[in-house]
Length: 265
Image (cartoon, rainbow, N blue to C red; front, side, top):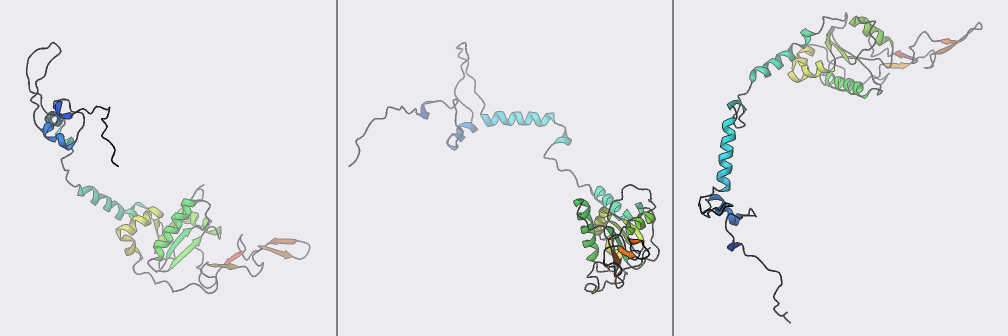
């Protein structure tokens, strides 16, 4: 039942016959030989009988590490803990608190009791759409009266904003743009920084609270279809003129909601 004992032709070399200097495997069984000096004498190529003690691996590594540390300046030491620079943090907070002072003094007459936001609901430029969405979400969280003016719904909002900012000749206008209490605040970066520092809450304090729910007429879009052209922006004129543009609605065939929309500036 048991197999007979067969001598293996493979010769197994004993590690005990070798000296500690011929170390090939870093295992825990050889840790003592590494931590102590090697008593085995070293023989040079000329077969001299000079016996010298070879320092251990850890001892040599410790000497090299101490030498490298002595070459490095004290300021570059990785073990030196630098003191916290509170001045830079205070300076950044101070800059964020003075954002409103850095912006030009621009005001909207008649908008002292609400927040006015110029934005776009189009997803053509994703970054602009995400910025407008983030700003509207932040401002809606304060539950104050919010006058949202979508430039994609009415082109007159673009002309109105350019006239307010004094950039009628600008070829490019970034969105969103926020006015709080009639005062120009800035764009998405300014609103986010003011919200993080808590200054935005101070700006909206004292403004009237927003009404709960949405408008029953427009559903919260601030626009309804034109009753004259039924949203086509075309009306038929008699006396052989034919169809012409409707004068009661905008280019999209919409008119502002008579219940919840605000008058143009």
